[in-house]
Image (cartoon, rainbow, N blue to C red; front, side, top):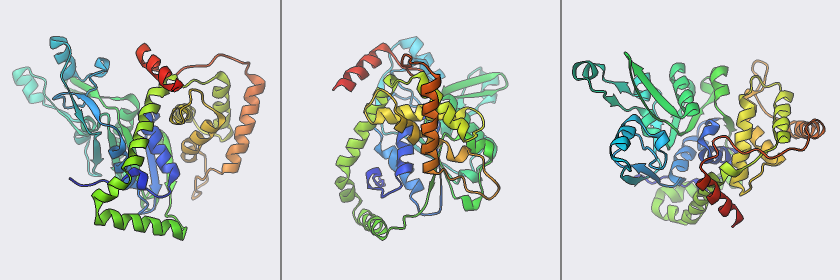
Length: 374
């Protein structure tokens, strides 16, 4: 089996790694677009993230990796089995990593229904596609800017809704499609249309490191990895396990992370100050800030969480002139953030904290509360 380069062994590119981890904590954030020149660890980081994540409990023999603890999210096949026999057998698998080829067609992505068999035999037969294989895992699209726009739309729709519905000639089939969407591209080969760019929750620009010490460390680690992958992996095993545990804890804590109306006002004022179109950025910043707080082991978001979230959510949504790079000035961001918080303090009265959307079951909340006290 091919050994995967450890996520913890990546040198630099902290913003890229942070975006990937936060989307792993809450895939509903909406995915990461990594833009950069060749040889900047874009695909290596995506593969390493999947290898870092914990194993999954799935319904045994399910073609869609359904979660046995979430009957409400079962595919049509598991739902039928569940209604017939009740509890379903389970199995454990590694977190899926699916690499989508640039030549992928719509049928290859969403899957196909066998209309002929349905008409002749009255049977509903569905052939799964890429979205089925990627459910509860990582879906990586290299050179996403070269992929057909319609296919990119399908991927983004599924990532946002968490379900894939295929309908043909009055016959339909649906299955869960919740995954961490990671796209990468080299801007020199063309850009995404603004409509598609906006639908990626996060965008990160990566460049090669210029510090000689960092470049030497990258070279040294890569050589050691190629010479002895197993020994190299063992060196970072402790760091990988610690990062995995931290992600698991953050996933459990996320439903308990609260925010106030002042936080909402601050986020809305901040995005308005950068003249961002629409409201998607506001939602992304809130979800990202909550994931950041959970990652840090907290149950309330802070201004720092909002700032870190804005760094990922705003650059590709800012208005710019032709041939102008969408670079977010850190000092300008901090200035606008202070002004936004000041306006919130002045215009919004003290209020009760708000909990998340889809906060989860009572048992999950109790477990997360107990964990947060430890």
